[in-house]
Image 1 (cartoon, rainbow, N blue to C red):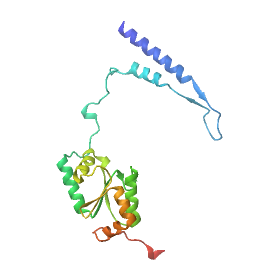
Image 2: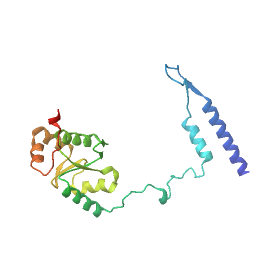
Image 3: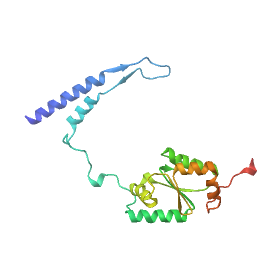
Length: 192
């Protein structure tokens, strides 16, 4: 009885799915368009089919076994993160901890800091805090500053985006960077 009931429920779900899939929204075919209709499945239909064909109970939270969960490429504890940060800020005269990378920032504040430093022509290193949750929290603990991006010059914490903007506007940033070990990038002014 149970098997027959399950097969009947699956056939009914497939039938509902077929009827909904055949229902189409029609739109005037625009110039250059290859399609004049769009098939849409309702959330309810997808949910019914998922339940009908799923081997997991509906109340399952769909958590995966630990072997199949995403793994960090590097396993660190907080003391390792603090050591990494100390090494970064000591070895790099101009260091940014940011969301994303300089070529692909994932935060407007991080992009602003990168734009300021590139505009000024300074070479800098950056580390993406989104790549490791421990790094993201570790940099906040290390500097006792709650936000990212964070800029370090000659091993000293300078600040975040707002401070960088203010220092740039009043000329303090140029003073700080020109008196630091941070290197200016070479420009090809002679070739123009």
